[in-house]
Length: 69
Image 1 (tube, rainbow, N blue to C red):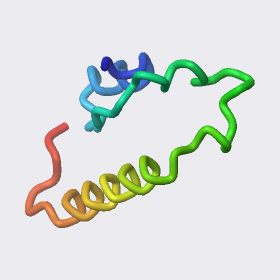
Image 2 (image 1 turned 90 degrees about the vertical axis):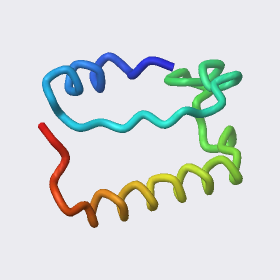
Image 3 (image 1 turned 90 degrees about the horizontal axis):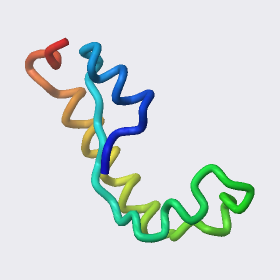
Image 4 (image 1 turned 60 degrees about the horizontal axis):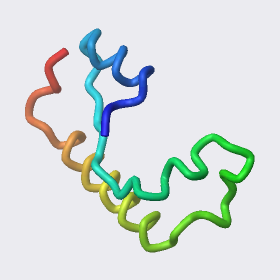
């Protein structure tokens, strides 16, 4: 999956970015539509993504050197 246009533009300017891969089979059925509501959240996927972001934040916070820009 490609980065959203905003993220891609920032990445091209050297801003560090992160775009995890995820199951997109149903993602765009609701993405940014009136049907994009909390009842579509799958608790196990939310937990997995939360864990992923926590590990990423921990790893980045503990780097010996900052990410290149």
